[in-house]
Image 1 (spheres, rainbow, N blue to C red):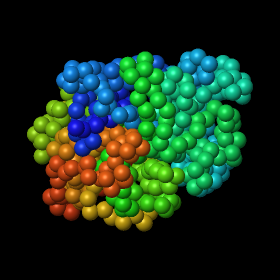
Image 2 (image 1 turned 120 degrees about the vertical axis):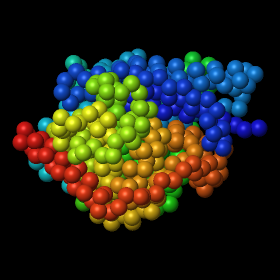
Image 3 (image 1 turned 180 degrees about the vertical axis):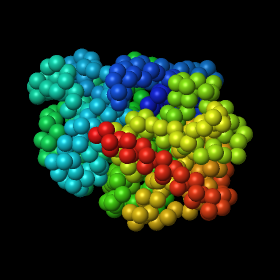
Image 4 (image 1 turned 90 degrees about the vertical axis):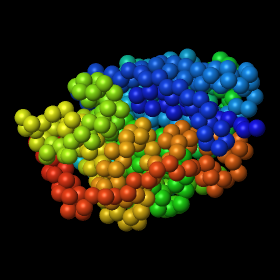
Length: 503
């Protein structure tokens, strides 16, 4: 008889719960979208209460579905794993759990000017050496400092020890345990600009630089650990929370990329490519990030990562903003219906350019438009942009000394698109492996929980859960690949020049 683990995958545009059996098979799942708010140019916010309510709702519905199909027994649901959108910043009162302000999302750029000042003051070298990160509004520290300085009374409350800061995992855990646990894991902590990834602790020098009281911060634990027990009013029974990891690190685990040199790329709201570097921190000279992949039994495994801010979000914009499509499923047929975009490129810098450019002031553009351009070309350009950005990341990793992988494992909502996966293989000139279970982010959280709960004995044991579904091999001639990519680079340069002219 199989045991089950409930995985919470709290993402940028939706909350999802998936019940896995110990073989990594999906038994039940439910997903609910929630609203994004854009109160000013470059600002992105979410209602923290909606993050909480949708998370609780999807968990309850998954367990209700399981109960109905299994004669009412939940005895074999052993625990919970959490994975989450990273860097998104929340601040709440310890006594009441009340949020002081909406969640400031990882895509938010409101602190771009301050980040530029910090760079000009020469702080980036120290910050990169300690955290593996660059100074950018993407990360949590400047968001948190902004909250303390712009929410009436917040700094005074923080200094009195009355407030708690957390990324989404930490906030959910606080609510799930009735305010008893203020904890995070090393992978999420490593995305704040406040955590020394070498010493594995909050860094006093950085706390002082960003003017953040240490009493705001959660305790940092291993990614597979005892995170407490959720209260019964969360889902109707008390379950241990035994695994937490940021979404991209959870995907690396769900893809069984446990050996140095193994890599995965996740295609969701954004795109995130991550390569395991083992116990070594690979310092990037091409604006990639060094980060904690996971920490198990107090041993840290590191990764190098490239982050693209807009991937699936561009398709959502085509649907909701431009209303060019009714659903993302249409894009495969539309892209395949034409031979090329005829020189049209989309640079989806809606909230700036991520790696390897890191230009927060850049904004999106469509280039090469003519009267012959139709909606199929625009849709195809949006899909192609994801692959061009992926090539940007892979080329940067190779320049930084990473071994060129022969295979890239992929996951996320976009990878069901066969046309997109073939174009990705063509642009990266790699074999693209799609797993049987593409919900690898949630699977990674479940595996981490299972490790602590004794369902799996080791990482090697969890690797047996990964199963191959389909491979895509590069078919495009090198000359055509280089020509298409040169056009992309030209489009990006034009966007970058425009951003620099405004700054």
